Length: 354
Image (cartoon, rainbow, N blue to C red):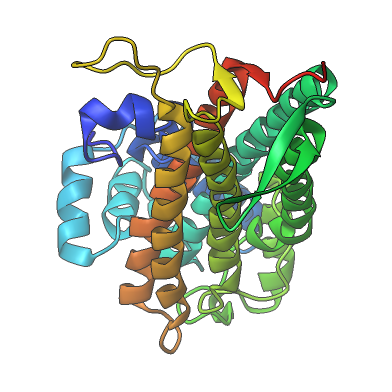
């Protein structure tokens, strides 16, 4: 399937294969099928469908192989993958049980919950990468923190500082980003179950119990109501990703300036080469952090438009999320990966006191 990153020759520099894998169609479909399995089992537990219905549905899911070409055509027709996916799944379930698959839910329940399931892994990976950066900064400060640097304000020489002061300006925001992540993440990693218009009417008095059982089975947070049109958690996630990338861009621009030959306040063990000047050691990874920060800010700004979610479901705003959130996650992974490689390349920072 086509990559989210449109320029394959740049994917090693600007992409992140591990995070991109969680947005692969097969990963998304697996998460959707996990939703349908949890739905059937919860509904059987509450007597909404029979135990035989649930066994037939779950058994079909275990061996289900979707027709990806037909799914793509279904999306082109319906604007969403779920109608064709449910049609194919029902065709794999024997009668009289097939009509009970997907009962009481709607396309948005499946897609939003599948996103939450995959974002658990995406955010876990990003959090681990931030922790790795913090360890690298701790090591850098322990090694070179006592070295002296010239401070610069408004791009002009100011007063002498220590390398530890500079490094702490890189480290402290990363700690705050982790604190922010722990505060907002539960709002995103929440089950979506609302039915046709978000009121769970199809499930009647069993609705909340079904939702609670599903949330427990999928290891997602419980939802007292559907959040179909309340997209603030999605945008909050995007803004946090942009904050992380933006701060990494600050680290990148600092190192780019400090690595200039005239200053030589940072010595890089490895840099990019030049086709015309083989003696050059270009700070490629530092520059890329600046690029990715600006790209993430552009994506996050676009994601804000998805808040304008008309009535009980918006095809336009919802589709915009699908276009912007995955590349924003991938960009953040790329920025963190490049930042880690950049810090590992720093042979020295500052000048030891003589």
